[in-house]
Image (cartoon, rainbow, N blue to C red):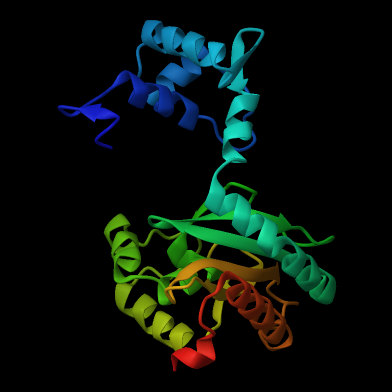
Length: 257
């Protein structure tokens, strides 16, 4: 925030980033008026900033509307940690998908949320509120719980400070209950979610540990809550996470206890 806010007021860079962040899934194109409304940036300023972003190919004009530009995608592919992790994990996730025929995720932590960096969707799977590059609150997802249980204390602190928002009637919103769940995840090495992020969805996840022993990612299997049997997929998810951990040079969970 220090680079995008000066004396409590967003800098021009901060305003430009705010405009880019206004785009949402399922809304590839937005008009100037809507961008100004969403960001609180005056229309003349927004128009000037969008013109500069267009010159850098960060946005593209589509008639009277704007959409995100190809340059953003190109830059995203250059992020070393994400690229290296995706390339390393890809064959392991493909094997997991073939073994279970369920939707497979790989997610990484970012503040109080998780970001999905890989997804293989199964035919006939429920509508899961995840997408490549998308975010979800960590406290209501299995990957999030795995990352919290095996992450540094400040990761959980960020989640609690952000608030345990309720997404469904089954979302855990009590800090004490979440804490007890995370203790069980540390004991078993497996995190579960049953209709906490979306109705009808169940998920089983395991952490991927980096060289310091902290979870740098999490692998999960998701499917229909009335069809997905955790006992049936736990071993496959755990095996995949352990293989990735070993490849990344992290300690295996058995060695931690």
